[in-house]
Length: 374
Image 1 (tube, one colour):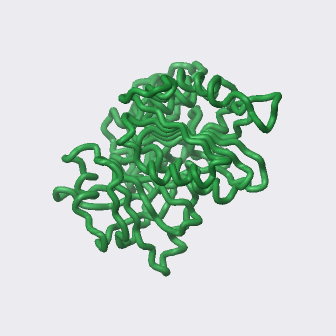
Image 2 (spheres, helix red, strand yellow):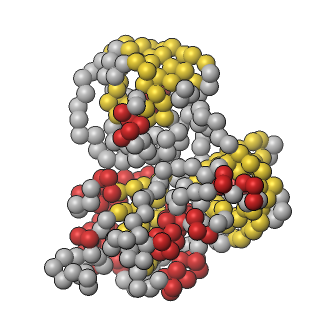
């Protein structure tokens, strides 16, 4: 997960030593960092969170986010990093960094998390595409360790079988927890004996999964496994998340139980916008960003706040544009907006006036927001 711009909020970094480096596939590396005793408290984390690495590549400083693959009980910081090309900054990061080198690593953060319920019988599904397995792996290891009554099903898509990151670790988990964990691999560019497992994970595949895998429930003869699903975790590219999230919702899973993490910029809403809003024109917007004050006039409210400010070429922080990452979080100090569904802000934060600019439709002729959150 890469951020084109850093958040307006300061991020705390610490110098950590690279303890292990492993090439998992031709394009994916696993990195592990050594946490000195005096930094143990700063690097406590929840399953599903991420860290930011600050590093140089070709003379330029980069600051990118990477999900943790380790679980909290493992007491270590491990990442999975995909190299998109030989020209990418991650190529230098993975190929030139040596064990023993020190790197600036942020304290863990992020809200792709779920509440632990170790005393309940739960059914949790995971959908992942490619490197999107990283936070799902963290979640599954944590749940298997801390929730002895929870069963998990993982549906994992890749192009080919030789391109599966963390396949050995996943197979070891399934072997150890075979009574509670089932993993199903899907391939978009490889022929499979069972046609179910050929193709991308999408809405059509969800229907087949419900009917062919999550049908009979040994624990309850009167219902299906799908009927018993408590939480769904999805991580991958935007189109995949949109298709799978809507498929789960349209087949009865409440939106509050569908959690997703996006690994790239995505300019569409995950769920369809079901409301129509009154048209406003010539809207005055005052905002504070990186200690500076700006004023601009927007033509109308047909496009959400963040997207309009970016069109005006203001350096507003963002990453996903879909209400998932929280990079564009700000405080609404004056005026009115409609905050569409988002995966980041809590109800308490919304009630305190916090909004996500990427999911905000302007409903007043003037608004004032503060991206510095103070």
